[in-house]
Length: 245
Image (cartoon, rainbow, N blue to C red):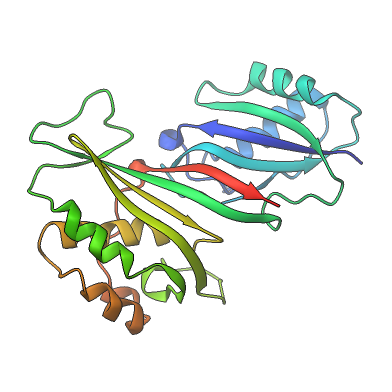
């Protein structure tokens, strides 16, 4: 049975995250509904990452198996014709039968955007976290450096999760300023629930002078969510890329 691999772009503003939920619109449900509409077949679509409610994506990867012998381009064209305007298939390929979008992923890149200026945003208001207070991005980068490596990130994991493995290999955590934009890029083999947003919220507290850059080492050792800072708003976060072998 053919396996279809999709690279998806979506604005997560109006969705309760990736994972299918009762009585709430989700990205997974929208993709499965589109597949059913164009093929009259019911499939389970697997996503590389379960993005939270309000989180966006430029490079989410999804896969599904279906008994239809269609070229990859036909899938892309057909799905884009029926998907809502805030979800698009950027590319479609026919993958190996054993391909699994989640289990085969080797790395993910997330970007968090902060708008640092006195006036509130209008055009980008659904895609940036607006901070108007003084923000020390150099202190933020110093703090971020202490999180690099293969570590227990329990202190940055959201509640109500069945995950039993808190170890992630965080390979990059960069704080990049360009004018009034501060961008935080995080790349790891895997991420825990709310992990990026919790890291961003904590690093921002360092930038605001509420924590010291060296305090993140102690937060890691605590292995307790209450030791870390706030969870940054979902709408500033975007899944940029998923890497495979």
